[in-house]
Image (tube, rainbow, N blue to C red; front, side, top):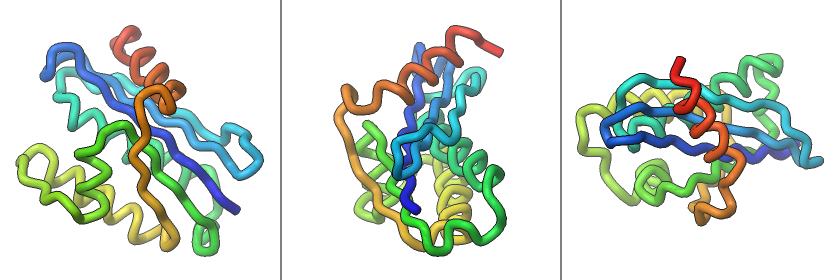
Length: 140
């Protein structure tokens, strides 16, 4: 089974009212989970990390333990910074991002042995962007 997670975080003000959006599709193209969470006042990069973390946590919660051992997961973001940090090409320097990076890498290490990271242009991340904006608009 293959899954694609699209995630996007946004902040109106940076830092400002922030939201995290994520959607996961299975190999048939069916939406299996979506997340639209308001984060309070955060930066855009924190929101990007939170979108991936929350999307993966919800995905893991929907399936039995060990389900993803033979599955492949592709994570797609329009944040080049986050993608390059996850690939190990860029260092994570900001103190607010380090714990989120570590949490995300731990989730991945425990659950997703077969993973690919892809940077996509914003127009190919519309579903996750809409969810992040929905969360920011809702504000709770």
